[in-house]
Image 1 (tube, rainbow, N blue to C red):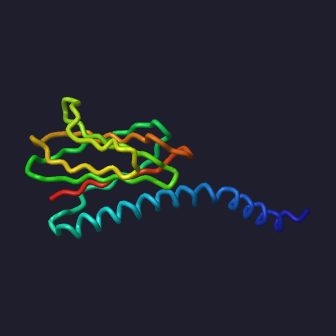
Image 2: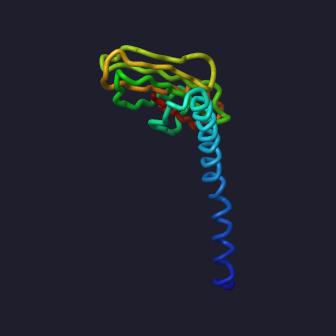
Length: 148
């Protein structure tokens, strides 16, 4: 057996076996990113005063929960939107204040939660994402924070 001829063939086969996982993750993340871009264009179309503050993307298994804490100024209005990949059937979003009290939520049975939010006082608020229904774990999701 000629080692020089088999090495490229073995490497090519390994790349083919490994590539679908990476391409799949990119595809799911791209699905989420595309949806968030549509949300941004819709919000910006309604008023040019809105700007993007943050995008967060991740993945969760069904019934998984993840959270992030951000500082919100009481003088700013916010719109938070979330999206998930095509395997996701329901994702929920909740905003809690520093005392763990729910101050905004979208827990409808859908995959595009939206929350309009203007805090009563400036401070830290936690955004909690729950992957309610995911037919092919894990499901990719993302959310955007838009402010004016």
